[in-house]
Image (cartoon, rainbow, N blue to C red):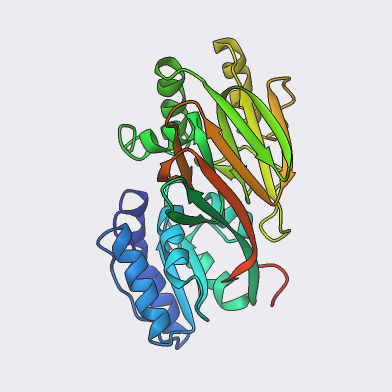
Length: 293
């Protein structure tokens, strides 16, 4: 359990979730995390000790680190969302209320979902489950978790987007998607396994978490007015049909820029360009609605 998720929402939800499991006679051990690294270490430790299910009570970031911790083990992940965004939970069909999510957890069968592996130029490797990318969206995610952390919901991400748009210029991008090449002046490049990030920004409305594909969205340089026009679209349908927006589907994506550009995944800052993204089909099992495995 991440006590700071959702501005303390997870902490407030813990006794309710504990009471729910106890009333059903379920044996659950709660452990509080102290940092992102601690979440990964606690999850890995639980997997080594033979726990069949390792569950996050927290936000997308906490679930992101839990998945990294159990990756490669036999443990099955669970998610009781109590963060500010909960984008991954929505795509997995998990209720936004932690107690309702606990009920969904108990009634669901384990299902396999894809992960995205990111390799950086210095050899480091990271993973994420939902959506990420590089450029303005990574900067916005970073600001949403720092400068604008106290702002509610999606306004954190929108504030970060506008702040970055005003101050950070676009960059020259060279992208390769399964052999297809694209180059040009770019605001950001999103690589998605899920439909949304940033508390409901629908960047890739056709993405599926278990289809073995990456949805890639390249957004070219746009004027201020164009950005304003795009905001209500990405907050609703995500059907952004601007000439500046290019969409691709691929299993492997390589992104290079003319300068160091931030890269994020699930709202967590992962590193800087260049970066290679690759889908890992069925890499993790999650207890969530859908086809069981």
